[in-house]
Length: 313
Image (cartoon, rainbow, N blue to C red; front, side, top):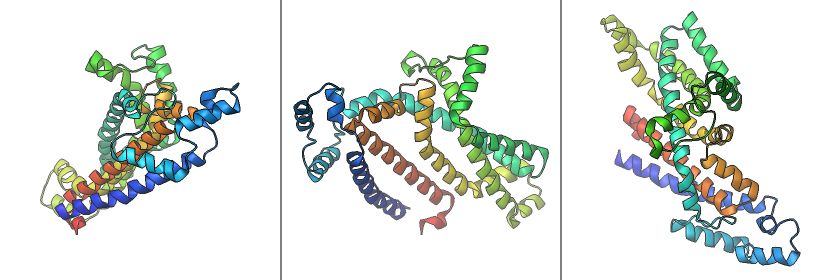
C-alpha cells in the first residue's frame, strides 16, 4: 500500500507542472491588458507603459514565468494587481463560503443519491425504478441557475422559510450558516445527485447478477444485508469514481451558484478577477483548484486500493 501511495504521489508532480505552464501561458496570450484597465479610459500611452513596468509585464515571458514559479515554490501566490493584497489573503477571506457550500452540496448529493440508486437497482424495471430515473433525467436536464431561481421563488419569496441570498459565516452560528446554504446546496446538488444515482444503479445492477449474490440470497441473508454488505461494497469503485468527478465538476457549478445566490466565495472572486484581468488572482485560484482536484483524485485512488486490493499491484 505504501509503494502504491508513493507512486501516486510522484505522478502528481508532472501534472502540476503542466498545469502551471498552461495557466501562465494562456493568461499571457489572452487578449486584454491589465495595465490599460488600471490606467483607465483616459490614460496616456506613457501612463500605461509606466504601469506595465511597475507590474513587471515588460519582462520576457520566460523571466515572468521564472519569477512566478520561484514565488510559488515558497508558497507565495503573488499580489493582486488591483487591491494590492496578497492572493493568499484574498483566497483565505473567500474560502469558508465555498468550502461550506461544497461540503453541504456533496452531503446532500451523496446521502440522497446512493440510497436512491440502490433502491432503483433492487426494484429494477418497476415503477420505483422509473421514478428514480425520471428524477435523475430532470437533474441532468435542468440547469443549476433555473432550479436555483425556482427554489428562491418557492421557499424564499412565496413561503419565506429561507433567506433569498447571501451567506452567514460560521461565527454567526452553525444553524444560521446552514440555513443560508440550504437553497444553493440543493440547487447545486441536484445535478450531482442525478449523476451519482445513475452510476450507483448501473453498478449495483451489474453486481446483483453475480453468483455470490445468488449464493448469499440462497443462504437466507436478509435483503438489507445482501444489498449493503455484499452488493454495495463490491459496486463501490465506480461510485467512488463518479463522486470524485462530481467534486471536480463542483468548481464550475460553484461559480454559477455563488453568482445566483450572492455568496462571496471563490467563485465570485474568480469571476471578478477574470473581468479585471487580475493575473495573480486568476493564476493563484487555478493552481489552488488544480491542487484540490489532484488531491481528490489521489484520495479516490487510495480508496480504490482499500476496497479492491488487486488495484495496488
